[in-house]
Figure 1 (tube, rainbow, N blue to C red):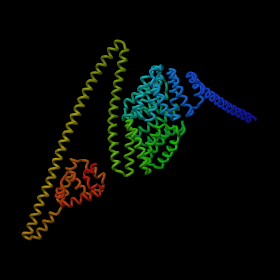
Figure 2: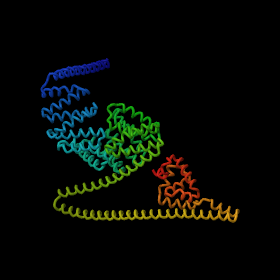
Figure 3: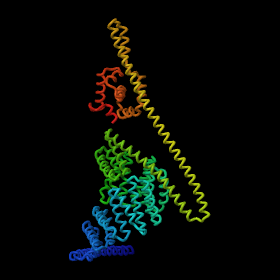
Figure 4: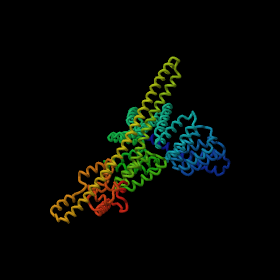
Length: 619
C-alpha cells in the first residue's frame, strides 16, 4: 500500500512538471508572437532595441531569426551611440554564431564592425574581448599569424580588472606561437597564463596551462624534463577527480614517451587517457576523436586490425556536426597514413597535400614536418621511390632546421631563467636593510666577476672550437683536392698502361706477321687479352674514388641493388667524365662495346637515351 502511494505521488510530480514545462513553452510562444507583431509596427530605434532585447531569449538560437535580430540590435545600438551595450551583446553572441550555428563569417563581421568604433567603447573588458574573439575565429581556422596579431591587441586593450581575460588570451597566444614554431615566446605566454590562473585560484585552467608548458618543453627537445613534470602533475591530480585534465595530460605524456622511444609507455598512456575522455563526455567529441586517430596511426604498422577498428571509430565521430575544424584536420592527417596501408594511396596523398597548403600559408612548420613524413612514407608504400626520396629530403631538411631552432630556444630558455633570477635578486636587495644590502652587493660583485670569467672562458672555448672547425674544414678541403689529384693521376696511369699495352699488341702482331711465330705469339696474345683493369687495380681505384665521392657508390647500391660489378665500374668511369674511347682502353674493350654497355645499362634503369647516365643517377 505504501509502495503504491509513493508511486502515485511520483507520477503526480512528473505530470505536474510536464504540465509546467508545457505551460512555459506555450507562454514563451505567445510572448514571441506578441513581440514579433510589435516589431512590425515599431519605428523608434530605442523601442526596437528594447523589444528585440526581450525577444532574443525566446528565439532559442534559431539559425535564421536569432542572428538576424542580434545583428539588428547591435547596429541600432551603434546608431544610438550605445557602443558598450552593442559590444557586450555581440561578444555574448559570438560563440553561438561561430560554433553552434557555424555562421563564422557573420561572427567575424560583427567584431570587425565593432573594431571600427573601438575608441568609443569605454569598458576595457569589451575592447579586449573584441580582439580576443577575432583571435579565436582565426585560431579555429588555423590562421595562426592573424590569430597571434589579434591576441597581442587584446592583451594591450584589457585593463587591470580583466585578469581572467588576460590569462585566457596569453594561453591562446601561447598556442598560436607554438603552432608557428615560436616555442620560447609560446613558453613565456603560457607561463604568464599559468601564473594568472594560480593567482586567481583557477585550478582547472592552471592545469591546462601547465600542460601546454610541458608540450613546449618537448618542442624544445627537453623531453626528460617534460616527462618528469608531467608525472608529478598527474600524481597530484589523480585524487582530485579531474578526469578531463588527466585525459589531456596523458595524451601529451604519450607524445613525450614517443619522442623518448618508450612505445609501451606511449600505448598505456593513450589507452588510459582515452578511458578518461570517454568517461566525461560522449564519444562524439573532438578529444575522443584525436585519441582514436592517434591510436589508429600507432597500430598502423604492427596491428592493422586494431588500427582499422580505431579508424572506423574516427569516421563515426566525424559525422557529428559539432566537431571543431581543428580536431577534424588533425584527425585527417593522423589517419591518412593508414589509408596508404590499405593501398588507398591517392586518398592519403590528397589529404596531405590539401593540409599542406594551409600549413604553408600559416607557416606552421610542425604541421609541415608531419605532412612531409606522411608523404614520404605513403609514396614508399606506393612504390614511387623518387617521390618518396624527394619528400624524405624535405622532411630531413625541415627536421634538422627545427632541431636547430629547438636548440636555440632551449639556450634562450636557460638564458631567460638566468636573467629572471638576476632580476629577482635585485628586487630582494632593494628591500633589505643597509648592512644586508652591502653584503649582497659584495656577493653580486663576486658573482659578476665569476660570470665575466665564465663568459670569457665560453668565448675562449667558442673561438677555439671555431678555429678548430675552420682548420679541420681547411684540412678536409686540402685532403679532398689531394684525393682528386691522386684519382686523376691514377686514372691517367691506367690510360697510359692501356696505351702501352696497345703498342705492345701492335708490335706482337707485326712480330707474328714478320716471323710467323705462331706458338709464342698465342701465349703473348692470351696475356694481353686479359682485363687491363685487374681486381687489385680496381680495388685501389675504388678506394681512391670513394675518398673523392664518399657517398656516390653507396647511394647507387642502395637505390639500384641489382647493379653488377662491371656496370659499377662503367658508372665510376662515366662519373670521371672520361671519353668513350678512354673508358674502353681502361676496361680493355672496344669503343663500340662501351657504347653498347652504356645503352644496356640505361635500358635496365629505364633512363631516357638523351639523359646523361650519371646525371640521372645523382638526381
